[in-house]
Amino acid sequence: MTAPRQIRRRPAARRGFTIIELLIVIGIILAIGGLVLVNVTGASDKADLKLARVQIQAFNQALEQFKVDMKRYPSEEEGLAVLWNKEMVEDEEELAKWQGPYLKAPSVKDTWGNEWLYRNPSEIEGVAYDIVSLGPDKEEGTDDDITSNDGMVGEDGETLDEFSDFTSTGG
Image (cartoon, rainbow, N blue to C red; front, side, top):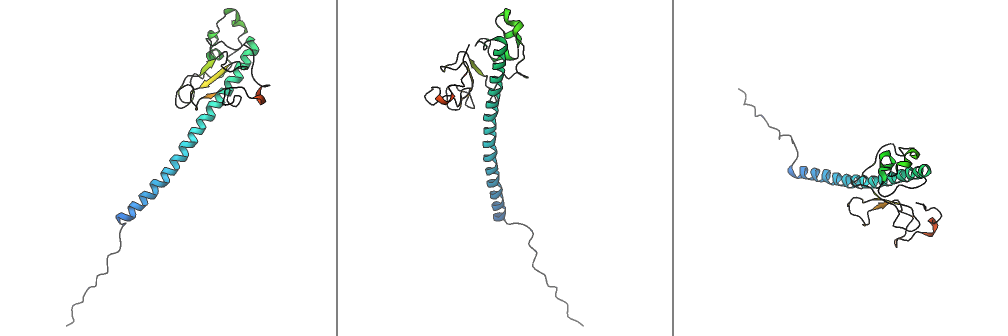
């Protein structure tokens, strides 16, 4: 008779991760996600600023074309809406001169949902008009405002000498 065989059991194979390993992996994923989010948010803010500046350039070009046709810039009462809406022209005798629309699509609000501010005459001496976006904080007169005069005016509000030959004049 033979002795009964003893069955040897092998130690069980490792089948998973420990809780510490899982926490480390989750921590790494959250850190990477945070870095990506910070970079994407910053890029989005920069894109919004660039878009607002491009919209102001489009307004400037449309206003210059309006001036060529009408021999004046829009009044503050007419506002920027006169660039796409003929009915906004105040003087009925001038309706025949209007050759618009001067913008392909109405642009009533900036990228942050604020209405554009248009001033004629400008608050800056030697400049015909102001176009202002209130920026992300939606408050006028703060550092994040974007205007058609950015780069032409110093911190003291005075027109910079190197831009004096390029300022829009007239009314």
